[in-house]
Length: 114
Length: 114
Image (tube, rainbow over the protein chains, first blue to last red):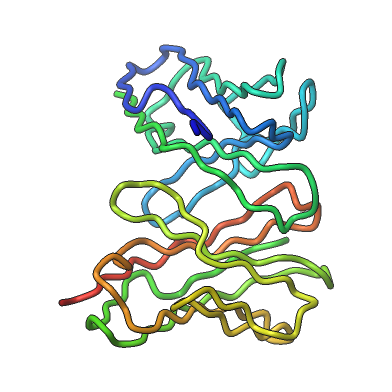
């Protein structure tokens, strides 16, 4: 059971570079989301999707783009990386339904922007 | 605004003892869910326990239980018979009114001392 797969696990970027963090799930989950985790800040929601073709902003969306062309994949794009985007990024998915559903998390991506 | 507050950045407990982690939240909703997630040094996010607000009975999962005080908007996690493997960061989480925007507290770093 693969669950939620994130790639890469580690990445170093220079300011201004672009990159895409990949997230894929094999559980046929309709809901997918991206979080960033910073020391002392907990996890903060960047973007989320409730199904293919549907995305919405979370708490900290600036500087990030997402799209959802398939149920399985939900990539996160940094168009012009900034040092403030240095963080650990988590992708999470869950089945459709009410707010009581469990989130399944990927193993995280450690991103450093120099 | 919907927020989650964890006021204990760090805690420690002796092995086999009991410890309680605090969480308060703010919402105008009447029915909702609350969660505790655990993040060990491996960085993996693991669901510990879930509580539905309309249920009077506090949730219990083996050595983990909650003290849910709806009127006070308090949701504390009690860990009994603490084990070395309980050493982790613990996050309180609330899915928000729509159930799609999860809000996490800033976390409590728990260390179990042998």
